[in-house]
Image (cartoon, rainbow, N blue to C red):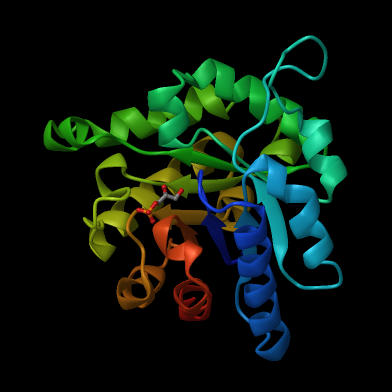
Length: 252
Ligand code: 13P
């Protein structure tokens, strides 16, 4: 059985006290109501990591960052390295989110560099891929995602690739209220799994967790998560509300 995961991506939201309060309330909920099916991950801004790690001590919740530097250390003012992230107690890092690709010009080669560093630091990578609306309309969304994975991930050794979580986030569904239909999500997830099978074989493909992201909420999570190749979600807006996030974790 592959791992089911629901990760909340807080993006650039919450000051420290709001973030600690949110993490504390989600933690309390899962201490009272342990999730049997999915691992829940909170991906906070960098400055929250150490504090939230303290809040989550002895809990079942996991912690992640939303980005990392593409160099291991040194004179890179303002950057945060994978080793620093790991030293906060975080276990995960999101790499290749469409907002990083779009607003910070991160390309597949750079994302590959970040991925290799993150693995070296012992972090689990949530690697994002997905097409923009014109690419879907032109029917080239399979080619787009294939290239993102080939350049971003497929030079990894099998034992490293086995530690990757993939998140399919169609960019047209992020923050728009437009969710991919369960069938659209399944079609892409099954395609992604077929690419992994071709490159790494059936065993690794069957074990790879593939998350869906894009306007996922309590009202649509169950039907998307019911698809055979959807193994959980990467949640933006709804992860900022304790009740919504916990309901989505429970929808797995
Ligand atoms: P929304 O859930 O707000 O659409 O964001 C999805 C996302 O980008 C998660 O990384």
